[in-house]
Length: 345
Length: 194
Image (cartoon, rainbow over all chains, first blue to last red; front, side):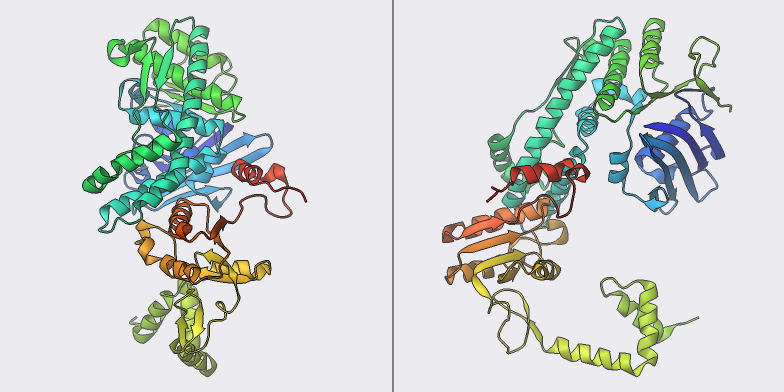
């Protein structure tokens, strides 16, 4: 995929501006100039969601009643599209592809991008949710059919939650039975994604000249074992009124070079998180969905040496990259063939 | 302006499925001005007064009259979620057995649990004898799969053959244009060339 241009209207600090993107783009400017906001707007147009706010309406510029962003993209080969996202203060959200309304699911199935942000540190050192997201994104990148499986599972969780909260509990075992193949498939695919990510992580670390590896451990329970676990938890689930088992709750553990995140330095964690995103990017490219990599201020927690290695890794990627930095070009952080978007306060 | 009775009429029509605001307004003005349209509403009321559903299969019948669906070949029963699914299968002309309207799927979000469906009536039909196969024509969703499991468990003690419709390649389609899930199902549920 290639992002050609982005138009922003009433999006946070931007009243109306258009930006063009090259094969390599550096967004530079001081703090508060809108670098992260520009990446956020790209993600809204390509993925229908903000990575900073739970609700898109929070992106509306002060004094306006709605925002609108429009991205011109090349989806691969000759397939070009105009993607838009908009929201108003009432919470009405609208996503379109070439003027036609499109669901977020269909949008995600058509686009391919990887977001690398400071929050990625949580992927290594935070709660398992971020790690589940990472594996789900990677699994989706390996096979877009995973979107259907994951959305069916999500539907199961919603139906089951509604049942556990109602007074009647009669369909519980039937719903559980229907979920057994979904749960097994999600675990299998997450396992495959974890192995692929680990391999690409090791390759990226080696390319950067660092001895760094990642180990991702997750539940491998499938089939009959899943059925038994679901059955064993039924009584407690009824008592608590919420689902207590399944891939949406799975603990996923991650170790960097054989050590837990707690015993790693913040620089190691930052570089580890960055390598995971590089691994995800390469994995998507190998699966036939060359992505756009958006890297937003990821170098803050890295020392000079790691920062240079990270830049070199990004520069070597055979995909479109969009990187933000509070440093201005000319300080040695902009490759020669780079499109520079210089923002001001 | 106070639209009074016009507004009430439009709002009532809007309660019907598939009726948009514009369509409701068009029908409302037609009903207020056109005697033909007024006669159609009176006829609708009479038809609905005389309509009922068959306690055995869920199909709609005229009160006091025998059920046309139950009169079909009872050896094979095709279970469908709704009236529109029944019409879809019947129009193919491929199925000559009788139907069973389930009245929904297991879907707690919509307040539907097994006891809200007509599974017990289906069991009674099978237990009455003469049924060789029950075909479950239910969607491949989590709600459909849960309902398949429920009906399979319900009917298992009777010994009747329980099958479900295949998922696979649509007619006149090329493999290259199908999604992987459909191709996967089509491969798994392949049939022998006879």
